[in-house]
Length: 254
Image (cartoon, rainbow, N blue to C red; front, side, top):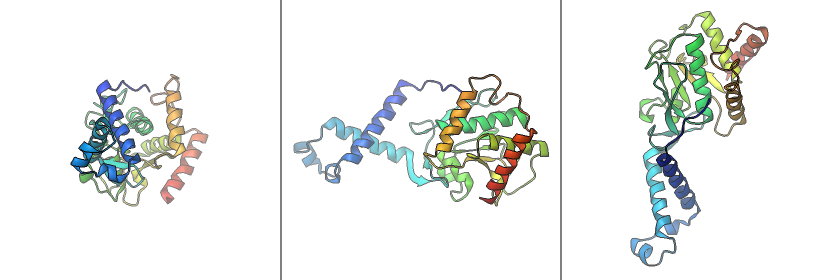
């Protein structure tokens, strides 16, 4: 799946923030805490560098929380505003988009949503909720992953938290097949002790090779008409069912 271009302003803003943050991390604390008088008269750091540091610090306060979701991804205060979480398109659906963490996480969650739309039930605008503000989620529950952009709820009004049995058997078979297709990198909330059958979460920590490999596989499939979301899939094939059942046992135990 191709990724639309990001505006030059966004790229420059991120580059400035990242550069400033890197500079700030490399500077002695005494430099960053220098008095205004010292900064004006004797600080050897160029004003442009100090301004980049100030902007990076302001960006961090505005966007980042310093708190991690259950799977180790940092929660963010805002979406579509210079951080890592943006509203991304879901091709082939009427959805206006879903706010998720860009990159590999986006690739996997969008794939899940598309297969749900094609094979489980037709989605409509407003049926999917991605990122949610940190203050609006229970941080100790899997839904807290939404605040880091690594989870999405599909039709939460139809599958309320704590309730089971919201899907027909053939729909469950598709869900299990999707999870197995992604090699267990995504977890379904229906397997949690207190189920949330609407919730699908990235189930690995940042930097996990399994996430990178699963996303790369999906990107390769996007170049082949016979593969990927929307392509014909025999979810009852013996090899697929065996893999799905094995993963189901593992994820239910974890």
